[in-house]
Structure formats: C-alpha cells, structure tokens
Length: 522
Image 1 (cartoon, rainbow, N blue to C red):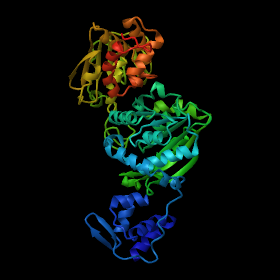
Image 2 (image 1 turned 90 degrees about the vertical axis):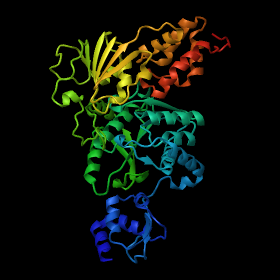
Image 3 (image 1 turned 45 degrees about the vertical axis):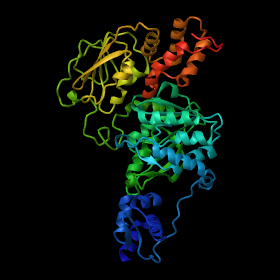
Image 4 (image 1 turned 180 degrees about the horizontal axis):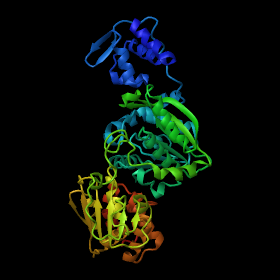
C-alpha cells in the first residue's frame, strides 16, 4: 500500500490516471495489459510500474486485484466525450465497422500503422456530423488505414469522400468495400512526400488525418490536408495525435510544427481515439480540430518542400534511421552507376555527376509534364520512395529510362507497365525501354492514355475512343467510359491506385464494344 501511495503522490495532479487504473482493476473484471492500457489511456510503462506494486489474481494473461484497495482507487472516469451520448443509437454501424476493421489489411509497421477501434472511427464520423453540416460537403482522408472514410460515408451518404494513401492494399480494400456498399468514396494513390494528387488539391471542405506521430510526419500530413481544402475561410482539419504522459517535450515539438503552419487550435479532445496497439502512448490519441488562417497557405507553401523522406517512427524511413535517403551507391561513398548519356537527371544525384545535364526534382516530375521530350532519362529514387517507381516511369515519355534505387527491387512493376515499357533489373538499377507502338485498337487507346499520364484520364480516353470508333460524339464517348469505368472521372493516371491500373486494359476493351447512350454498339 505504501509503495502504491508513493507512486500516486509522485504523479501529483496526474495521479488520477493511476487511480483510474486501480478502479478498473478493482471492478471485478479480468483484464489483459493491452485492454487496461487502452481503457485507461495510460502508457504501458506507467501501468506496468503500478502493477508491480499491487497484489494480482491471475488467469492466463488476464488479471484483476486480489482485494480492493480502500482509499486509493478513484472513480474510473474519463474526460467528457462530445459524442459518447450518440453512440448507443449507432450500434449497428459500430458492428459493421468491427467487421470491416477485422477484415482490413494488416498494418505495416514501417508506415506506423496502428488500427483504431471501430468505436473510434464511428465516433469520428459522429463528431464530423454533429459539428459540421455534411450534406453536400467533401471530406478528404489524408491516409485512411483506420477506414474513417467508410464509417463517415455509411453514417451520412450525402458527403463525398476522397481517400489519399500510399498503401495499395488499403486503397484496394476501401474501394472494394465502397463499391460493394454503394458508398460515395473514391481512392487516390499518393506518397505525400511527393505531393497531393491533382484531383484532391483544393477539393475538400473538411480533412481528417491520423499521421505518423513525429513532428515531421504530423507537419507533412497536415500541410497536405491544408492543400486539399477548397474552403479557405471555413474549412477544418481533424488531426489524431497522441503522446505518452511521460514525454510532453515530444508533444511540444509536434505542436510547434503545427504552429509553424499558422493554424488555430479550435479544440482538443483528450484521448478521443483508441487503438489496438500503440501501448507506449496509452493506446490513445487526442483529436485536434484545426482551422487555417490567411497566413496558413503561405506557410504551407514555404515549408512543405522542406519535409524530408524520414517521417516515420519505425523502419528505414524513420526519423532516427541512420540510413541515407539517397540511393545506396551514393550513400556508401561510391559513384552511382553512370547513366547512359541522359538528357535529364531526375531526383537527387551527386552534384559533380554530369554537372551540365539538366535536372528535375521528383515532385516536379510527377506534378507536370517535362518541357521537352528527352530520349534518355535517369532517375534516382531515395530509400522509402520505391512505391513511386511505377508513377515515375509513367510520368516519363523517354525511350530509355535508368532508375537507381537504394537497393535491389523486391518486385518489378512489370505487369502495370507492360503496355509501355520492358523492364529489367541489374542490382539496384532498373532499366526501362519503351516498347514499339501497338497495332490493335485496344492497344492504341491504352497506350495513348498511359502516354498522357499527367492529363485527365477520361479526357484522353474519350478522344482516343472517338478516333477509333468514329461514330461517337464527345458526350456519347464520355458516357461509354463512365459506364465501363465509373472510377475514371476526374483522375489522372498517376493518381490511380494499382488495382485500377490493372483494371484499365479490360475497361478499355469494354469501351470498344459498349453501346453509346442511344444504344448503338461499336
């Protein structure tokens, strides 16, 4: 008892956390450590320190107090939840989200994935609906491993939702569930370090993000969320961010990153988000509501390109990683394999390499077509950005492309790029050779679409389809495309998730024979 009292006294006013843990332990239920951490929103280290001092009755990996601790446990209360009173009326939605979360792709540690509970994503949707008018509104999910997009669209079908994510599995899963359930959710691929997709820029009224919990990760994801807002006067950003009660200095660094973007903190709801994992921060995170000011957009423009590739807490892309973000040969002090007379160098190449050759940044290369059509291009891809390889090649119209990676590629995107390039790999170098023009109608349409990867897919497809079929008007051709590929509207090839790129050849084939609006087949 004395040791417990000493721990509580040492915690000072924050001792309510420990008293809450004791109250939960003494309520008669059996607890696992993970459940106790999540329910109390207290870091694992703090809970473990307390458990070492109390007498526990154990059953397998579960435990409870052997006897009540009179006078030490407090009431197991939590800070007021703004939508807790609404949750009982949406039990069906919580149950549906539990199923969806359970079947979702497993999280990737290298991307700092930790799954939020179904209860959490439903409460996020309820808060959005309670605080804002969602009918006709647009919501941008800047990363969505938690499936907040699906919960919001099911709760309020009147909201349009766009999900931007780097994880192809997450995008494919969300798209499949949205199609199955008839939800107004569209998906876009993006590595946010290389930019926000064109169709998501200045698009949303609201944005929500649960980013990597580093100052760099929070700053980058929130900056991209700002770029996604079309309503500059009334738009809002919801941010999930948590830190251990033991590390206020880390939270200060994150809040400093937010203040540098000149955002107003309208509200912070403590421990609003709960997770399966992240026990170091109590399996919980606060929910911030941020409002941009007139000074936010200049601050974003000035800072967004300054965020590096290392934004995560785990893996080779972590902020504490000793690995270099430049390709491996340069990192080891050796000269990279000399590009074969490139007309443009893309990415971060050594300054003394082909000093007179024009250069372009990766972000610029993906954002807009290069001013000329170089025959040979060399691209350097830093560690952690390998997922961008298919898009970097599709953004290139050269005959030969040499790509230097940080290490040998695990998988070449040969299937995705087979209509355009033949690919070979030699160690950490990938060689792409543009294939001859196709001879079939399907091949010509597909090639024209992929050769214009920066342009609106539906527009390029429409013009190519009219040229092949002849009898179609622009309106009829657009209707045919919408019928065979409803996901093709208002998107560029560079934004398409991999599963949509894989569907594109079959959709192009279908557009050649699909009837027009008047019912005339091709």
